[in-house]
Image (cartoon, rainbow, N blue to C red; front, side, top):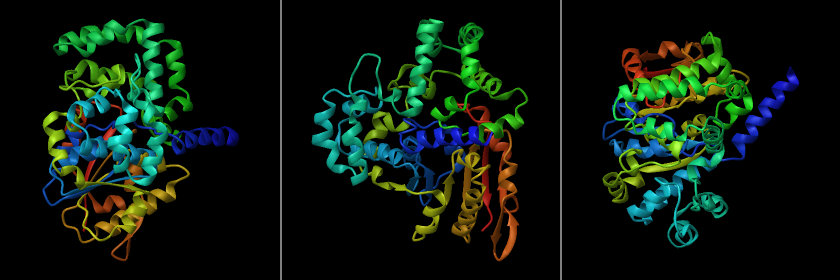
Amino acid sequence: MALVSWVRGRVFNFVHRNNLVYNTCWEDPRLDRVALDIKPHHNVMVITSAGCNALDYVLAGANHVYAVDMNPRQNALLDLKKAAIQNLEYEDFFSMFGKGQLLNFKDIYKDHLRSSLPEWSRGYWDRKIKYFKPRKRKSFYFRGTSGSFAKVVNMYVDNVLRMRPMVLDLLNAKDLQEQREIFDIIDRKLWTGPLKFAMSRDTTWSLVGVPRAQREHLEKQYANGIAEFVQDNMRAVFAELPIQDNYFWRVYVTGQYTETCCPEYLKPENFQTLKDGLVHKVSTHTDSVQHFLEKHTDHPLHRLVLLDHQDWLTDKLYFALVNEWQAIADRLQGEEDARIIWRTGGLNTDFVDEVEITHNGQKKQVGELLTYNQPLADELHVKDRVHTYGAFRIADIAA
């Protein structure tokens, strides 16, 4: 068992240390805007992922957004988006990040984008700008490890289930009744033996950024395991919520957005607002959350967005979870208006509340320092257009 665990860890670490994992953000910023209640003086720290939501928060009115990620490739993606906002016209920008393809991509990169990138990001895109090369049924959104998994899922839909027309009908459904009718047919055919087998493999979940610790955290709380959790959440997305503006699943299935179904930063008016100067309020930092908080102390922080990464730290990296919360408490000490939001793959976050740190010279459990707004979190969670998480948390932390 120790050998199996070692191999699993090596696979996950290889995937995450050597690749762009996320080509788009998988957290719904519509919920975040309500949860964070961003004011013009607020500085926000967010784990970068693909950078979509960092741009969304500054569009929501934040004073500055610090995008922090240990994977420099994720920051390189946000750096490329920033460079494209500054140097391209909307048509080319939307082609690149809306359609996932760009004509003359090499020349445009060389002449308009490359010089605006930080050194590490420049080196990365010198090698990987080919991700945007126009090809039939190819897209940037089928690149990276999560994109590769999306590509496999789409091949399964096309070549095994042969249900592409029906899936497109679902995305273009006019109302919930039509969605439910189409989804019921798809759902009955989708869950074949091979798919259920794939759902049971750690390698599968590594490709979409789910470490074994997070999967085990969920399976302890979900009686029938992760496959049923996924089935339930797919029904929530496709049969209970309007699909018309669900850009998360549209890009996953088609490899592209439309101008009416896309993240806020891709809409013409918001692109122009960012281009007019707002984009400079977003900065990238390749570091852990803990070390960023410890190093960058020359500005107040008011909002922290931790995504779901705490689930990753519940096993052998528990010491890192403790150190991170110690850094959070130290950094936000004295700040009367500090709020933290996060997701979890499980159904509760008791493991966070039980973390023991030092606050004002006394030993405290993190749960003693947090005031949760769980009614609001639960209300928002039901509306989540992504629906890949078990729970959502909104908490103010004691000064």
